[in-house]
Image (cartoon, rainbow, N blue to C red; front, side):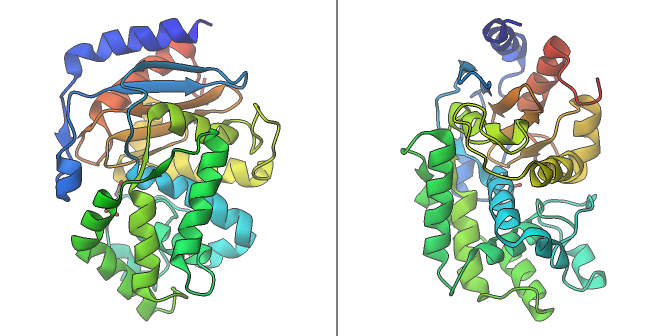
Length: 307
Ligand code: GLU
């Protein structure tokens, strides 16, 4: 299969749609994104990366970072993670608080904000949020074989300055005893990991191990057990796009995670990992043109896990 021809064709096909969707404007730093941007990259086990459009340009990966913190926490604490967070779809928005009261401070899943905040709490030892972020950065740089990956501190500060809802979620969970570290310590790490800036090419490469049962097919390094990798993919399939997860599975049929910066990361098990970016979002916060591009990709490759 000529994947380079496929990504070139997808970039051409979606060109008339560039600029569609609504750019996230809940923080000024994200509202500045150019809605006409579009990038796609596919990382494959031979170490190649097929790219088209703005695939080299860094963007705010936002909630896609939750996949990497989830993987780190599962590796660190194992099944104990499930005592403090569930693994069911929420059917609600990314920052929803409604279920938390009835479910006694246990968030539905690790990929919605409340769940990701609990996951981040697991990564912080001795109240040291900086060390947790350093570790995450070093892991991502290793996976992507790219030491230039970093946090966009303007976005992180903006997230914190407008973070009333996330503070609400965190305090609410703390009131049920579901946070071990101070709320502000956990949130300082959470805001920073949401503000990670990666290009499609870096993101696809960083997550390649998730398409290969937890083992990086290029370096041969085992990053996660195959059992845990399968579980992350299952949670991504059911919960990766909030109340848009069912539609995403229906249309694309690949485990994935969206971010309000307009990125979407998906894995095609046994084939490769894919990152797309286009800042305009649909109602549920998934990149509108990014999802169109992924639909085309699955039509061309038949990579849907339901094929
Ligand atoms: N940083 C965003 C928030 O916590 C993440 C939302 C997303 O990307 O879906 O509000």
